Image 1: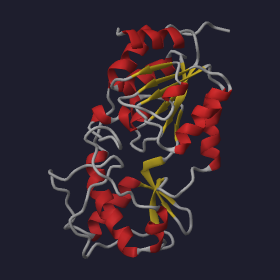
Image 2 (image 1 turned 60 degrees about the vertical axis):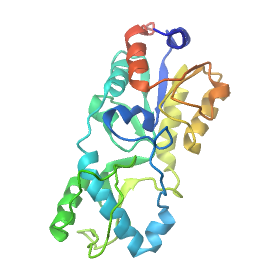
Image 3 (image 1 turned 90 degrees about the horizontal axis):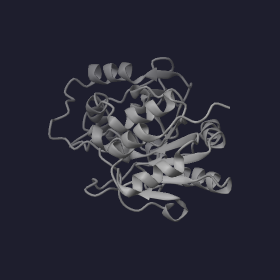
Length: 275
């Protein structure tokens, strides 16, 4: 182990740990980071734009569908597996993730709060009906048989690609009421549902330390959880390549990729004593 990882083990040993993850946890699975070195330039769609413009919705759904077929085939990596192992051994109280890829659940983590939602489901904004994304994909492909993602398409962090054209694309609609559909993810300009954030707060409240992995904490939801932990005087350990907004509050900062570091923590952290 490197010195920084040894320091992290020393801080976390014997404590119940809440985990907060970001896009950096999934880079070793082939999903690009938002802000890391080499990250693609992004102009994320706001919820206001999505709701106001049919053209914007076409552009979103074309890119989202083209990317989803590849995004949904991505597999968890060693970092995801390590966090699932920490939960099985009662070291981690659960995972709070800013990712929408579902890889923590796929890796075996049981208590997962998906702060920004999931790409697995689609919701009707009119009647509230929820659909499996796979069923919506069937509808899209039946209505738009020409829609194929090229192998050279650049996959973006949210699972979409940049479409060359949206001409002629037929939008998917709710099969119950014909209403507008939207993936069950939190767009820019939307707020995280109150109950979902409360679940994240509960994980932090029930922990004795907070481990941040693969997040620069540029999004305010992550910093709010850092503030909760800091107020409770919980030790904070951050594993991330490059700076984060909470480095000054960290007991230990490990400037490295997440997969190997999380695997080392899973190997060396002892289980907490039974009450």
